[in-house]
Length: 189
Image (cartoon, rainbow, N blue to C red):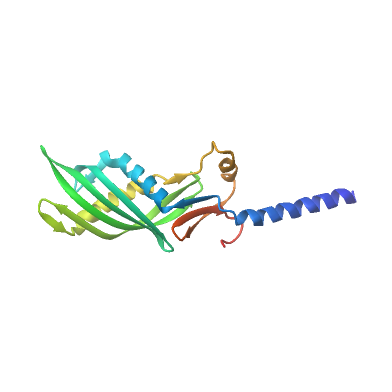
């Protein structure tokens, strides 16, 4: 009976130590270049459903640059759009800068962006160059809605380690130039 009690106590100690050690392990690190590629792929999927001032628009060129900071993720988009005007397509050059809040969504086991805020918007079309706030806000809302709808990264249940981790509580931390997913057994380091 005493040996069984010591074994149980030893097992409990090992389990507690592994929980605290696991908490400091980074499960997944998403660096800015990877985030750029994921955001580009996600926005290119939506390119057929884009609307600009109520007119259908398609993305012909897209460059995404992200910056991971302590206050969120800055997303800069430089794109060439073709806006449908009756029988014509008007080329529009657009540059948007937005700030978003990343978070770990346990329901999909992935990282999402939310609470987009427009930081800067510049547009060039038909001889006009400058800022068109109402048009920029509408486009920013359209892009933000698409990016909020889909997670930008999801843990892979086909990878044994990630499948096990999907059963743990996880947290997302913003660190210099990367998003880090790690176990949430105690307060973040």
